[in-house]
Length: 152
Image (cartoon, rainbow, N blue to C red):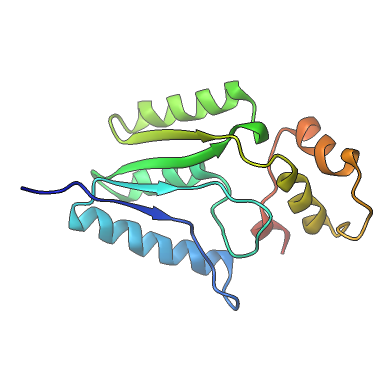
């Protein structure tokens, strides 16, 4: 009897590492999990931390779906307050069409404020007093989440 195994990869970078190195390590991990017969690998959406390069699970899933042959790929929490519901649905419907029977989606509520804080850190305004407008208006008006790796 075999037990189906899944893994969660947070695409973590150590204190001296870069997002690129973390993504390279995750690539090796996902390929190995596919070879070993794991059923699924999950990616979580994390913002506001320099340790995780897992900020857009759908992009990670698209990338790893092209590199692997059978393992299922899942978003272990797309943070719903950070995205348009239509955008989430369309992204995952497209992934599921491109990679049939390999895409799983989990939705989380998450702290919507973290996106604003990531943006502030990214553009260098982190020392500005936090008001509701600096932590919540930007994500609503832009409709995208910042990526720390693109800002460093």
